[in-house]
Length: 463
Ligand code: ARG
Image 1 (cartoon, rainbow, N blue to C red):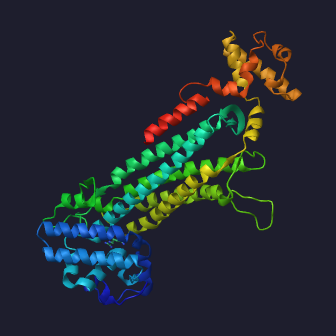
Image 2 (spheres, helix red, strand yellow):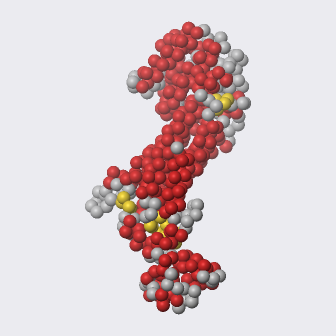
Image 3 (tube, rainbow, N blue to C red):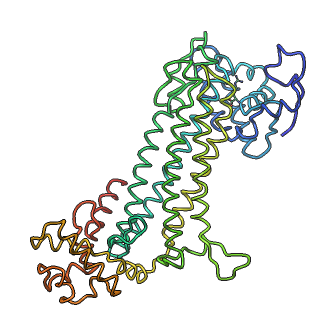
């Protein structure tokens, strides 16, 4: 970044004293908003085309502007563009360079426009592009989960409530629970995109413009689905950023919960999975360690996205209409949330297919903790015992099991029958883990057949 003197400033006409050097840096946004250069240029090209379309610019002026802006885009992409802090932001940097390149026509680009509607437009175009990338990453992670679910549709693991063994489930079913969470996330993201994809351009500073602009024409060129209906709202609205960040916070919350499960499963105490070496690191002092860094970092990063959401809500809550410089503070939280979310989804989509399952350990764990106790109660109910009485009977059998260190399936028929005469030899069919999961055979249940059917429905939905 370079500095420049007062006369370089595009708004310096009414000023006599130069900006204080620290204030210049303090008020500038170019160091972070230059990431929107592509959107800024596309917005300006569309604006120039519209101005020519309605006769405000000549077609020669428009041609000069368009090729000048394209040349600037190339300069930026080649890393040759000189960004200047004195020129404050991405908009004025590009406009000043345009005038330097093409002369007086460059000075006409800003006709009928303000940085207020320009920046709101850039933010929407930028976020629209990022939403498409994020939605694709979400989809990639969803497909990864479907792959694991299919491979592990019959794999038995303990299901938990209160992190205590509850009932046996299939690993495929567990993966499909994550899948469902991400389905809702993608739905929310695509719904939010509709409100992102509306064009504020034409609102100018706040009241609209006296030029005969054709907003629908510009919107069409930029692929906006609609235009904002009120100029004051157009330049001051940042709801779309807050909404996106709320969606991002919820996705990160989901990834954080997945992370927590992976970390627990990878611990020596659970030992259900092994994460691939490429997603873990060692310890500089303890040679035996293999730490699940990626899930831990993702869990930690959910905090910053939540923080960004609060920052954005707080940014807006005190603002009168219309544009205020406060709004410049919307960028860093948004960019940080976008980067964090993109990175976290990417690493998850890469990591999930690479994890190895320890089937025997999961099976052993499912055998502990009387995970088929509910199956025994259901068996008694089928044999005529009212559910509350059955619950009591099984409770007693479990107490006996705890005292004698035996799971239900390890007890003899005689031992079990002492708790109820409704218990016969066929009880052992329901006390097996396979029998227990297979019995939960309805939509949403954990039976392998239902998991396979759920995967099929999911694939059709994603196709
Ligand atoms: N850098 C500014 C922002 O991010 C651009 C808009 C400036 N508008 C103004 N009236 N000062 O919001």
